[in-house]
Structure formats: structure tokens, C-alpha cells
Image (cartoon, rainbow, N blue to C red; front, side, top):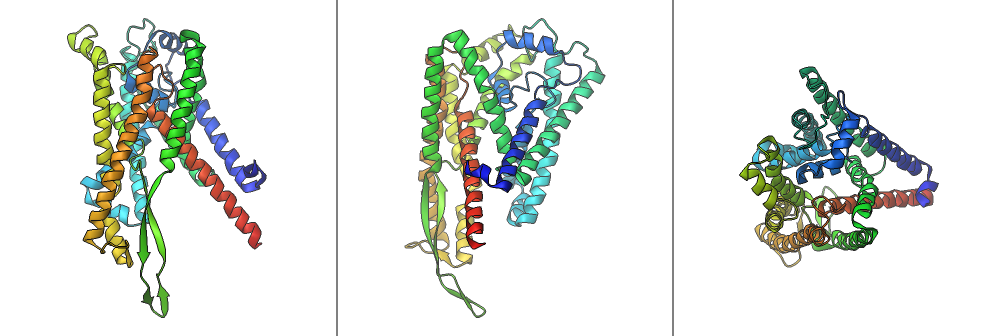
Length: 425
């Protein structure tokens, strides 16, 4: 309540809520040529592949409704991940990353261009699936009754423009609101569908299972909060040095290393890769042996899927952590400014020590991600809810809790700043 008593902080929070409300409104506006009645009828009788279900969740249900915001924030997420991965393969991107604010602005511009490009590709794929009725296999009602080239172009342009608008709305929240705009839009999309999903499970499977799911969500949320807040602090001592006539340094600080440095990226990568075969089979013969094998062995309720999912999560956790944290770069920066870890020589020994610590922390983080991803899936199988029956999986829980923690931290920092300003004034 204290946040709403501060005028400028209250304005930022209300502005963020307004933008989030506009984002949700756009999720219900259909794209040109889409029959809303037929879409609702097809949604009632079809189950989607895990990739489409994940993308639909991140869009707040707008994808399968073929709205103007059908692509949601997924093109921006994909573009951001690609730009980060290109830092390893393209030296130019790594140089831009080291240039500070100007380089970050250039990388942000590249991310925007790539987002629009991916928006065109993804919207063209979704529209093609809807034209061939592969988006809702077996549904007799065409979701786009007038499947003409003009309708195709209009839908692709509309969905791509919607992606640009979403990106703009997210940046507005970041600049004038509270918290990270893109993260808050993802948070809005995920949480908006929870009540309806719980209601559908209650009607179909009983309210006792809904109570069990809610308890599971609360338990995993508490565990995620506990682990995400945990840090391994590496002490760093800076020696005193003369800069002109001033004595600099002589301070002590630490390097905070999170247990889960990879975040939710390994789970997203794993889910996307394993869902790709099921998505590709929508373009082929639904009665073929390949389609039947993929349907039986690569569904979210199969044990082969869980095994492959776990192995991929472990792999991508180590891979992405090695990209985002470079021990040699950290050691060089510490040496440049006269910093050292007590008991460890500066330079190469420091880099080796940081690599050793990171490998141990990442092992614990990988097992943590594996548990968060596997427990909801196993419970889904035990409750016999069917594929896509669990409202919150490991991916969504990590995103929701992470965004919530970060937003609360920013609100608290804003309150502390106002407290200091009031004390000084």
C-alpha cells in the first residue's frame, strides 16, 4: 500500500497496469478474415501439440484465437536469445556488448529488426496452418472461410504489426512504468489463462484435483523463490592505488553468483526442440506410421519424452551458462582495476577458480531446473489430466515467480530512494 501513497510511483504502477490491460484487449481482436465462431468450435474439440500449447500460453490464448496479437512476445524472446548466441559465433556482436551503453543500443536495434523478421516468418507459418486446417486437425469448420492470397497477406501483415505494437508496449513499460516491460507482458499472458484452465479442470476432472494442483503450484513457487534468491558470494578485495593525487580502491565487495544462472532458457529450448516433430507431422499424413509413432512416444505424457526433456535441460543449462558468464573476462576486469579474490592470484588462477565454482553451482542449478520441469509433468501423468492439462508447468512457474520477484525488488528500490530523498530534503 505504501507504493500507492507515493505519487510518481503510483503513476508508474497505474501506467504499467494500463498497458497490460491494452495488451490483453488486443488478444481478443481477431485478425482479418478469421471466423471467431468457427475458431471457438474448433478450440472446443481439439488438443494441440506441446509447441503450439506453449506458444499459445505465452500469447495469453491469442495464438489459437488468431487475433492481431496472436504471436505474442515469442518473436522478441526468440530474437533476444539468437542475438545472445551470436555473441559466441560473431566477434562483432561481442565487441558491441563490450562497448557499453552505445553498443547495447545497437544490439537492441538488431533485436528489433530480427523480431519483425521472425514475426513475418511465424505469422506466415501460423496462417498457412490455419488455411490448411492443420492448426486444428480434424475440425470440420474452416477458421478462415475466405482463403485467398489477399487474406493471407492481410493476416500476415496484421500479425506482424501486432508483434511490433507489443514490442513498443513493452518498451513503454520499461521507460515510463515499473519493472521490465517484456517480462511483465509475458507475466500477463501466462496468468490471464490460469482461472479458465483451473475451471475447465474442475468441471472435467473434479475440484479435488484443482485443489491438489493449487497446492502443487504453491509448493513449487515457494521452492523457486527460495532457490532464485540464493547466491554464492565470491569475496573480492580491491587494493589501494594512486590516481593523480587521489587514493582509489581499498574496498571489499563480492561477486554474486546465482544457482540458476541460465534462467528459464534451457526449459524453453528443450520444450521447443521436442515439440518440433509433433508440429511437423501436422503437415503430413495423419494416418502414417511416423505420425503415429510421434504421437505415442513424443507426447508430454510419454516417458521417452520426459527422459529426452531431462537430458536436454541438463545440456542447455551448462551450455547457456557458459555463454552468459565468462570467467576469463571477469578475471581480466578484476585484474585491470586492481581486484583479487583473497587467497587466489590474479589473472589465470582467478579464472580457473571461477570456472571451478561455476561448474559446481551449475550442476546444482541444472538439477533444480530438472526437478521444477519434471515434477509438474509427472503429476500430470499421475492425475491423468492429459497433455496440456496442467495449467502451470516448470517453464511458466519460473517465469511468473522470476518476474514477480524482480518487480517487487524494483518497487522496493523505488520506495527506498524516496525515503532517502525525503530524509535529505
